[in-house]
Amino acid sequence: MTKFLRSLGLATLVASAVHAADDAAGPIKVGEFASLTGKEAAFGQSSHKGTLLAIEEINAAGGVLGRKLELITEDNQSKQGESATIAKKLISRDKVVALLGEVASGRTLEAAPIAQHARVPLITPSSTNKSITEKGNYIFRTCFIDPFQGGVMAKFARQHLKLQRVAVLSSVALPYSVDLAKYFREAFAAQGGAIVADLKFTEGDKDFKAQLTSIKAAGVDGIFVPGYYTEAALIARQARELGLTCPLFGGDGWEAPQLIEIGGPAMEGTYFSTHYSSEDPSPAVRGFVKRFRVRFANETPDAMAALGYDSAMILADALRRAGTTEPAKLRDAIAATRNYDGITGRTTIDSHRNASKTAVVIAIQDGRFHFVESVAP
Ligand code: PHE
Image (cartoon, rainbow, N blue to C red; front, side):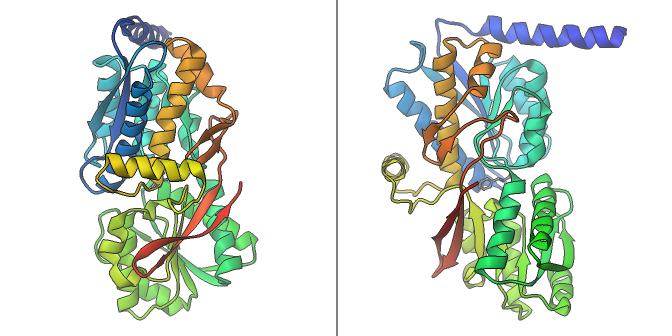
């Protein structure tokens, strides 16, 4: 009982401290945690640039509620444990009104309980693991979830690639990989395909020859690799070295220029699902690509950049509708987001605080990413 009262008291204290400290005379502080350096630096860099562009555009147009937005970004160096520490720091030291991040599901999962406990809304732009928004009613996302993404790639494998016997090579511990593998297996089997080999690797592994040798022996016509770009590219190279010529395919974790830099010609004829294509001819995407390229030295924005941008815009929209930075009211306004037209399509936050959105399948040809098809939810 004492323990219960104490934890209740702590929660109230933290929540009121956050609200009382939002100094209405200054800018509205928005916290961002991202992998700006380290293993998944490509994710954090892209997401951050998109988020920053949105904040700059909002401020150039006068800000929100008569105040400017101040983006406070912290780098977790792609390291486990850092995102929890950073979330605490952004909440208690900087008194941010909301948190934006992360790209990688595992790192969002670290920060979510902290944001929930402090009653500070958290919006992940691009983490797709289903369990994230189950951490509490202050946790939101502006992208689709992995049950959908696994189904998209299972259908693509069956109908587009006409695959029958497939291997799954997934990470043992990465929450994103473990669950995406699970949803893919279920959907692929439901559509009449067979998973004939199911092997694991550990994040940071460099040698996948043992797993690929078993996969080769099983006789497969495709390999699904739900992981991040570094491992996916090394796996593709080693598969080709072992004489496996079948298509490899994965999910949004593949998206980074490093996939092609590391994988080289081994990536030809591989596929992955993601959230948006910069080749989309719609005026919204064309305008965004143009502004992003002007701001960031001719770089073409990828899915993380587009989702980072949309997440900050959706937060600003919710602040306007809430009419206040008060956490409970801001939370309610984010939850009430309906038909927000952004760069990555139309966002409606559902009762589970998720967004249901169209996926895009990309092929790698001639060392470049090409749009293949879009799949509606
Ligand atoms: N969806 C991935 C995850 O949850 C992250 C990711 C999103 C990677 C978008 C690339 C593009 O871990």
